[in-house]
Length: 525
View 1 (cartoon, one colour):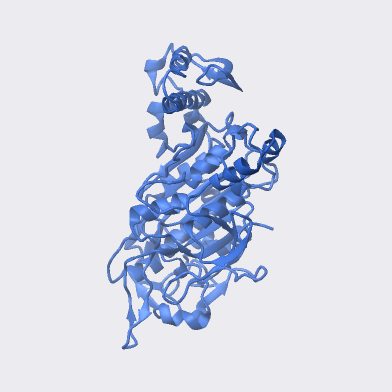
View 2 (cartoon, rainbow, N blue to C red):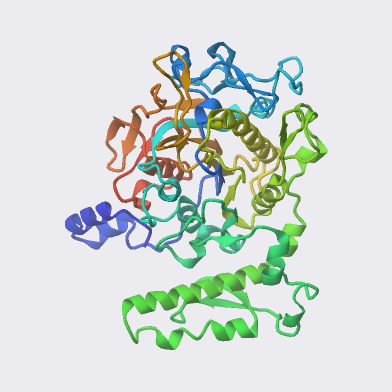
C-alpha cells in the first residue's frame, strides 16, 4: 500500500463501497513507486548550514525602501567588506514572470571578479555558473520554534518537536523511489556529515533509514569487498544469486546475491512470524529488511565503485578564474587577506559528489561545518561575510553538478536529475534602528527562515515570499492538501510538501501532522 494521508484514508473508508473504487484510489496496488518522468529529478541532496543563518544577506527579497530599516550600512569585517546599500543589489537575470528575480549584493568587481581588498568574489559563483536557471528561494518560513533541536526536526520533517512525528524528507524520497532503484542504489539514504543531528525515517522501512558515510576510510571495514581491507571474510564471501524472499519466505519479485552466512541469517525470522503480536511481526520484518539491504550493499562493492568515481572534478581541471585569490582547495575561502582560512569542506563535499555521481544512493545529507550560533555583537557581520562564503561554496557544488552528466539520463546533467535543498534550522535576529538612529544588532534564535531550491523541476530565478522589516514572514499562495488554494505564511511542512511535489509525489502519498500545502511558484509549470 502506498504511503497516504490519514485524512484521505478516512475519506476512502467512509465513501468506498466497492473494490473498483479502492483500486482506482490506488489502495489495492503494490507499494512500487511509479516510474518518474524524464524531467523529474530522481535524487535529493540537502545542504545544511548549522546554527541558523540570515538568508536576506545572500538573496534579498525586500523592497529597496525597506532595506535601510533592517540592514546596517556598508562596512567591514576582518578586513573584508560586509553589508550593502540597496543600490548595490543586482538581479542575476531578468524577472521570471510575476516573481521577484534572484538578486544579491554585487560585492565583486564586474571587471575583475577575483579582485579582493574593497571587493569580495564571494557569491560570484551564482553568476559564473548561471545558476539562476535552476535556482529559486522561498522566504519567510515559520519553523514553529526557536529551539535548535526542535527547529532541526522541523526543517527535516516539517513538524517542530522534541521527536520526529513524520519521517524526514530524505527518507520519504528514498522510500518512494526504492523499488524503482533498489537494484542499482544500495544506499538509499546517506548522511555524509550532520553537525546538528541525523535525519530520522520515522515509521518507514529500514531501507529509508540513514547510513553514515563520512569517508571512504570509514566505509572500508564495513563494506569493502577487497581481501586487503577485510581479510577475515576470505572464504566466506562467495555470493550466489537467487530469488529474494521476504521475512515470511515469499518471493519479492527481485533477486539477491548472498553469501552462505547471509542466506542462513535471512531465514531466521521466518519461524517466529505470526507467533506473537503484529508489533513483533513488524519488528522481525524490519530486521529481515535490514539484513537484505546489507546484503545488497555488500554485493555491490560500494567502496570500489566510490573509489572509481571522481567527486570534485571539473572544479579542479577547469578552476573558475574568480577563485584565483583563494587557496588551492576547491571548497574554501579566506578573510582578512588570508588571516582566516575556511578549510576542511573538500572531503565532505567530495564524498557527497561521489555518492551522487556514482548513482549509489537516492538521498544525501551534508552539513557545511561552520556553525552560525554566534550570540555576540559581531553575529550580523559574521553572517554577512561567512554566510556569503558558504553560499559561494554551495554555488561551486551546484556548478560541479551542472557540469556532470546524469547517470542513466542522456542529455541531462546531474543537477537536472537532483533536487537540492539549502537550509538551516531557523533564522537569526534581524537588525533594526534604535530610538537614537543607530542600528541594534541582536544575535539570537529567530523562527523565520528561508530555503533555497535548486536543480531538476525547479522554476528558475524566483524569490517567493518575503519578510517584514522585523523579519516576520508574509503570506504566499499555497495549494493545501485538500486541493483548495489559500494565502498564508509558509511553514516548514509546506517546504517538505513542495520538495516532494517537485520530486513528482502526490499529496496523498505522504502525511505531515498539522496540515501541509505546496507553495506556488517553485515547481516548474
